[in-house]
Image (cartoon, each protein chain N blue to C red):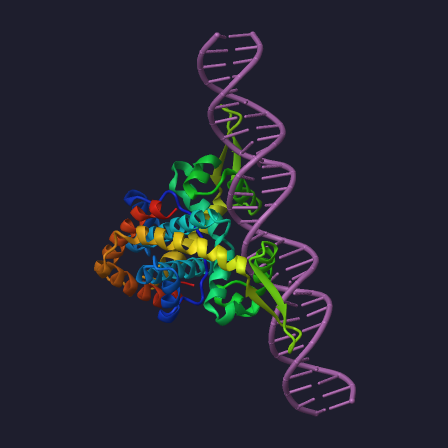
Length: 167
Length: 167
DNA sequence: TTGACATAATTAGTCAGCTAATTATAATCA
DNA sequence: TGATTATAATTAGCTGACTAATTATGTCAA
């Protein structure tokens, strides 16, 4: 993810548009601004989580587990839902298990499988993190009206539609 | 950056809101949706750049250089503008230099300094990448009206204001 | 003018992603 | 049944971030 600290001003955009006539300077500006705010938000989330000794990847695994019945899921399912590779999920689970926040349970039926369960300590950790996360997120979003949220949601949907044309 | 493939539905949000009454479910939903679209956009940009043998970090260094007079800048300046550490910038420049896209020039005045200059090959590479990037980005943004762009810009500004409350 | 501090870039070591290969097990079908 | 294929998790090795330490050089004030 780009962490642009120096978005182009109009003069720079114009300079590039001169050399590359295909450039849609307004679109470029809003695109870069979007990525910039997203990466800053992501960094802010990191800061919030680090107060509780967690990083985004590990935190999200805990959240995914809590969503499940009995707080149990397979590593492969977690990998798919978190959008990371299975190898990465193995590493995340290693770290969480080391910290005692989840445990591996061998599947008696299919011995290839290992179930991952949130431990009591993991639930306690979530009960510390989540209220802080929700409170801070609420404050962060406080300046945005209900109407703006809906508009943002619509624009996000349209952006999403356009993505295949990009990548 | 979270790469959520499985955003929470209303039932999940409600389940969490029950345990954590501070949760603003609407805010959470739009926040996660935002991060999701941003990471997908970032991934699409990766795909676009990889067709030209570049990754976001290295590509952005080339773009920053092209913005400069004579396509020259110091590593420290590039690091600040790209939002990465100086050590990371050293690594990015190593890679770009290995590919012949930039060159290091020792500063005769202050011998601690090394100037980084875009090479002809680097400019050629940019002249291949940028039209493709601009064309694809234009298509990606095609579904968003001028009015929506401006609204998005306003909301991005407000989100940005809220970030300190989060992190 | 030299000792302390500041600055620029790099190196060393860590971390969390990735892909590809490996191990173990299960399922299928000739 | 036994060989092939599919699946689940892990391991091994690579990349590009990071911080902290290092090297080299410059600046300034006693």
